Length: 185
Length: 155
Image (tube, each protein chain N blue to C red):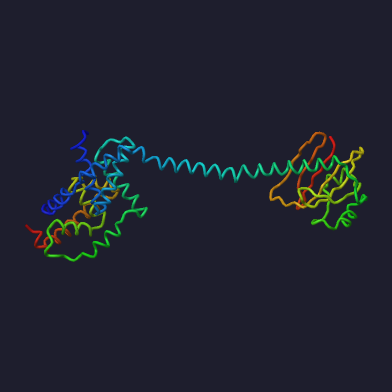
């Protein structure tokens, strides 16, 4: 077995790095900080991608939502202040629904409005370029508010209150309908 | 450790060990280079046992990532597996070593060249000492009989 050992030792003893390889190893170790550069660039790129993903997935939708609600509320407040007359004068929601047959949804009233307000009449209008029903309602004190009903197309829940000068705008969804109620403060 | 001769010896020992793992000079050089840079970057002491362990870990990583071209090497070697009576002892031994399983070649190298004890090898490779001794004995017997069959190898 000793002979085998000698052969193996001799075989490996003859194997060594060339001067060029030794130099390359030593040179490589001296510039090793540069080896980190691709890693740093990679890490920075990963962070940027992560930040962009977080923005588009988490922040952007919320910002878009806020923007949309604000625009909605501003339009409704502006319409409310104009106090336009109702085209259909009736106190019955069933009749209003029957008359306003061009709506792309079944007209209904939310419970809180039904309980506290009476209907004075209604007309077609558009909010955010979408067909909507604009209903005039009056509470027990005689204060008149405007309720907008339209089909909900937003894929997220909406529940917000926005105030524009003298007008308070409540916006909420219920099933497949979106309600926007404007009244004077 | 002083530079030049000591460092050269250190790198060459690592290179021979890497060669026992890869059986390919280019891959062995790559392993040694990577392992040495690894030690330098982490400010580790240039200790041969640590160097060998680093080379081994890098080799395993590369194998996992299918970077090591062992398959190619083995297949190219397998085309010349036939014993040639004209071949000298060293090229013949090289072919025999290349045909050995990596683990057997590694154990043989650590035992014969680096003069590790069976227990030290067992610790490094995380296997029972008895297995190391058994592999070592079997491998040497195999090499011995192969070399004895080669008339040019017997001096």
